[in-house]
Amino acid sequence: MASIGIDFGTTNSVVAQFAANALSVLSIDEPPAQWAGLGFDRVLPTVFGRGDDDRPIFGWAAKQRPGSLAAVKRLLRAEERADVDGVEFVVEEIATLIFGHLKRASAHQGVAFDQAV
Picture 1 (cartoon, helix red, strand yellow):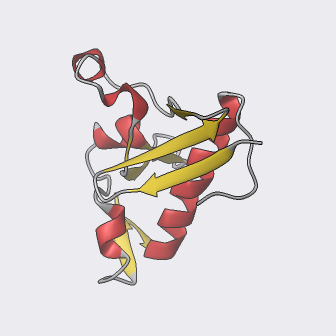
Picture 2 (cartoon, rainbow, N blue to C red):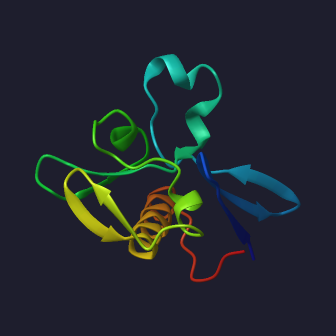
């Protein structure tokens, strides 16, 4: 049985799996080419934004879009609400949406989980 760990970081977030005495970090998002070669192919920037269709966007897509919110984790201790491209969100809601994205992206890598550390 595999163990799953999530590092919900201020700048980047990571999901890792420990199974058969080996650790593997999952590819959660696809960075721009200039970042992938620098080792950023296994991290999700902890950035939240809104797409053209007003749907939530995360990671690299959000990082490259003006009006997105970076360093979401830092806001958890200081803010109750945050403005994201003209729409107000509860900060905990944003964190929950990011965790949901991490879980869905992990499932696309073949790693489903109901519990994580």
